Length: 398
Image 1 (cartoon, one colour):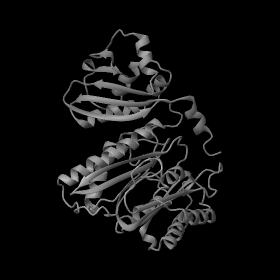
Image 2 (tube, one colour):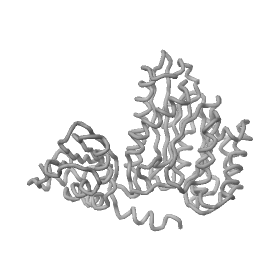
Image 3 (cartoon, rainbow, N blue to C red):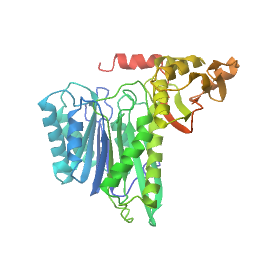
Image 4 (tube, rainbow, N blue to C red):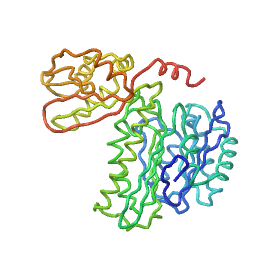
């Protein structure tokens, strides 16, 4: 258990240090190491522009067990040509030398400003310092080191029992802006000591990503560096999960709980956000229709600004559903903000403005759209748009 009372899987250590990449002097380099080479799975951004560190990880994760992950913040290592690939290689080589493994067993992640080369002397000093501080108690420092505009650290963990053995799943994430479903939507690291085959790891990760990280939208943008990396080092010594049996489904449920907790933190910490908003679309004829509507509402600037202003402008919610591309009958739709029925069968209802204001003043708000078409549903998490979102992103580079 780390100093923030999260369970840490056996065999994993971490560290986070400041090596001078960030101008403000905050921690900016994290190192995560497994004492036993781990099976690995990953999900990566669908943005066709990809960072150099991300491309390294996409290639190396395919056929290698992984011993370490090195992550820097403050610089995306993206869009700098061949130099970016060279710097990624160098970062992996430096890490591998300290860990005592092949460079192919090191995964990388970089996040921050695009278009500048990594300061490799600082990276080297950071890896040196981080290696000396590796500890199972230092995960909070690693979480701090991967943050950019985040306002709080994001960690989650759970313990379960598989084939009579205690198994731990731990996750950390960073993300506050440039977050929208197109996997990935941020940088996430998930670690477990479970014994599970690589094939089922990837399947489980794909499944839970679509239910969690791909259900978060802050601003409709996706980065060139986004990824979720998932390591399993088998040190729990449970019977290997190599088929979709009871242990697999128990493991996937636990994995989803960690991913969902992180996803809600990402939405809650949207740049300048004051409210976590859950969009529920229910009684749809199919999940795709429900998701299209929830997705459109979650990224609507008009909906999000109304939430910031605590204005019960439900018409913006129905309007977003209407332009989502989904096919539905607007004359049967109900819209709720909290438990207050705002619109019934596509028609506005009288409601108590003060009661609505009291709901909208809360830090967490649920919006429900009932299509009355079937029994499928979908959920998205988002946040409001405040003045601070513009301030943060208007001067991000400087």
